[in-house]
Amino acid sequence: MSRLSRPLILAATGLATVALALPLAACSGSNTSETTSTQASQEATANSEDAADTGSDTDAQTDSDSTASVPDGFTLVEIPEYDMSVAVPSDWDTLTSANSSDTELVGRIAQALDKSEDEVIADLEDTALISADTSSSSGDASADEIAVGRAETDALPTEEEFIDLAELNEADSSDYTSTTTPSGLEAAVFRMNAVADDEDHYISIISVSTGDGIVDSVLIATSTAERDQEIYDAVLGSL
Image 1 (tube, rainbow, N blue to C red):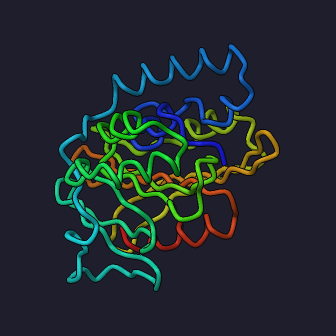
Image 2 (cartoon, helix red, strand yellow; image 1 turned 45 degrees about the vertical axis):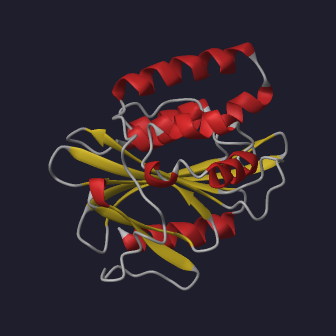
Image 3 (cartoon, rainbow, N blue to C red; image 1 turned 90 degrees about the horizontal axis):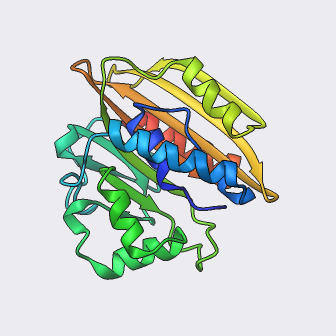
């Protein structure tokens, strides 16, 4: 699976601007895609909250007292600055600002996501957490990924905004639903499947409103529908 582009991470986790370029467009190598990606990055950067000081070590911040439902094979990671916890696969590597000085960890995630270490650190400036399956990648951009971010806004993203995102990336299928998390938060869920360079891309975005002008979002990107569903169920159950 092609790596997640910075514009996608900003769009999906900041969600101040959602009709932005996914990494799928970058696979084509066209000038139009490059232009869109550049514009998307500028718009998202202008609207996303800087989360450089958020996050921490997965083991150090596992919330053992939480009543959230976490299935076997997942670990609940607390993000104190966001006042939220997110389930991530237990065997993935998870990066936050608190452990960004761990060069070996950064290196593993960079290799798994086919990025430079500087790019990974730059992504961390706009997301509270980056988690990746580093065990199955050898630098071929096949790693699955989770990213968490925040936007200062009073409203969840709309179905129309997500439709724009799907159309921009020529999605084979997409779905938008409104739901409530186990903890009672209002949530907007967008799920999309697209194919680029004969590779499947499954994207799920779960956005939750805290009710105080904040929307927290979790981006899930996988290469199989089964893995997407498994992680989606775990993440939604943990919010």
